[in-house]
Length: 214
Image (cartoon, rainbow, N blue to C red):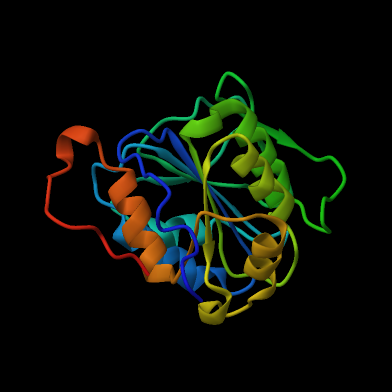
């Protein structure tokens, strides 16, 4: 699928947070993206991964072995820091407060899920506005579609994995149907794009031509 919004102005170094939502088929997708991130990646990266309520800390430990940034579970009242990858704890909704701290909730499931991608995205959009990037990856539900629309309405950047390259295309396809997203990319293209956008301005080197993502 073609990237439909290649002409949207990009602002490397200006984003304070990236939120991502992933479900079925997510392990390979997360590994691919996190492996692309440079050690000086500046924004916080907050991920909701649909998982079994009794799933242990395997995912955190495994991703720490392939990512240059620290990976940890988000904690109640924790201040969100740049350059850290946060994962939602199993069986809790993960919310971003206006003071850019986390809160955890055991409220009813949203889109049959707890944690819900929509809950994270909608609260993060309020806290970060245009300083936020939202990403929807492989999955078998519609979770995240409404949240990505909220990010778009708040002037954030919206990115969706190309359904044609997704192990489970339903979740990316739902997001595309809900919102005129800014970029539809392969998983490799997503990793390259956010890796570039998340680098501090001082680390970016000017170069001729235009980057080709996808």
